[in-house]
Image (tube, rainbow, N blue to C red; front, side, top):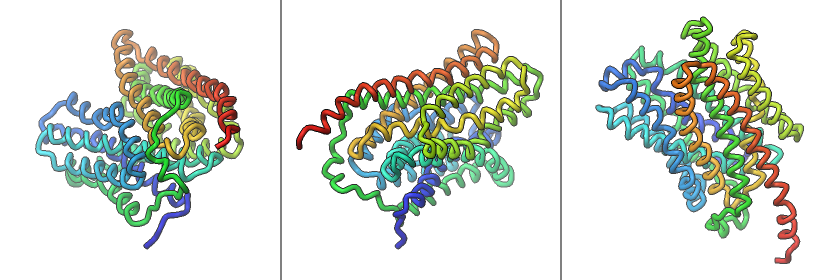
Length: 400
């Protein structure tokens, strides 16, 4: 039997496992017209089906981390992938909106727990000088999966049916599930078994993980607001809706290159704070320029797709500076809880801002402000870290 023991082979498997989540998440928009007709629902119900893949994160990321802490990464990841696959198949076979809701909810639960465990597994397998690169590689699966779903599923649905298009998205999690079940062996950690049940986080660790999660949430919320409302801005500026959508897809297509490269530069240079800070400030400036019309929108979004690169791997490597093997699952669960809570609340705020002002430009400047605001929790993370070091040093000197 083949055993995956090389960390880069494991990383490829984690990439495949995580690819299942964006493919599941984006499986409905490309086939939406046929689905709406077949199930007899409207766009409001479709919106609920889309949102149900993210909503469980607010409530289940922390319990998912606890499960990984108690049961280990392999069985929890396998169960998560099985839920994603089953959720896709249930939606594909659904005779009604209610059944489709259950399928999307199950898939969303699987996605949340999977993301927690993949983050924990990267920290287990990679040294601190490799973490940003490894995190960036796994995170680049998200834009790639969204792009693949948008590019392929519509054609599949047109050639066959929307049910076939949604059903084939189960192939990715099932393939990852098969390889993990046959070949994956958890990273050996001598003495870890006795500590695995100790799942507490200190007050300083809570503050550090909360700060890192807030940075990741704020950074992503800014981008989600941008890609959601920028097409409206471009239409206001005279673009067609189709052209606006194509322009705003450019950062997604650049991300699978820019994100791993940014993580590699952080690990290679050791200048994480400088690269992350530059990426945040540069991205905020680029977004803020978009409503002004001084620079062509296409040039700005190409620049944005490149400048954003270091943040994904760099921010997600921060928990590795804090967590120990015995509390990584719980810590990553808290990290994802903060992320999902903010991502649930911020987009509706942007929608209310659009309605109150009647201006897409105001929402884009809100996006720029959110992007820049990621600097504050990052500064807080480093401040807590510096304040904590004397206490850590004293504890290390104590006998026993």
